[in-house]
Length: 174
Image 1 (cartoon, rainbow, N blue to C red):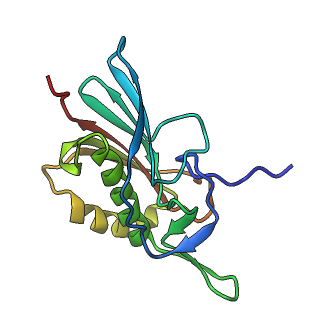
Image 2 (cartoon, rainbow, N blue to C red; image 1 turned 30 degrees about the vertical axis):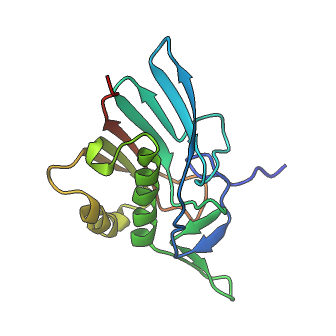
């Protein structure tokens, strides 16, 4: 039996685009007042295909699940397939889409990229590091988050070149 391809963020992925959807997102949070945590699946973003949230608050910290360039309609930003079936993947477009997805997810918790304190990036090919690093520099500078970038054998869909997870510090209103 063939299993559907899913992105590392748990979403099914299959179509292509260079455009990043510009959607406004609303969130559905599940609070747990006994542990001061809440989990949120963000409306308007690619739906997780597993039982996990896009973002989890634990006290003053926000944990963004591994995020890809998958769009709400299952297309992957930065992946094009031409009429002959040739696939072209663009690390710059995918990186920008991933960071913009993280930005949108953080906004549902009242946070911004400026609140991010740590980023972990997973690249399928370290030869993409230059393009990834260039786009990353459009969003963050040397005062930005601590960062780790590693190469992985593969991500759950062959059109994905990158996945990023993030941790942000955004104190709760007291």
